[in-house]
Length: 112
Image (cartoon, one colour):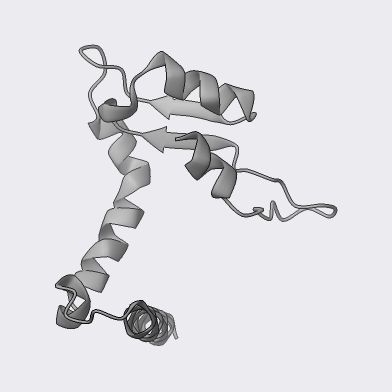
């Protein structure tokens, strides 16, 4: 988890000045409910929002996670990306970028 937190690029806050290094909060499900994970988040000034095992229901976190789940579902519509047929990483990355562009174009068209 520490490597993932360190790999997060800077996030713009909408305010002037230098962008933050990391997001303010981390939402995770019960699988990450360990002292080590919480300690790594706090060491990097990230507030952990992790559901506790046996205490909290994870549906509370669903309000924030559905955006990611929905986006994964949009990518799953591209059959060639859902099951990776290509062996070369550069072709797979190109198809992923193309799918991202198509998804963004559809969302812009939907709101205009």
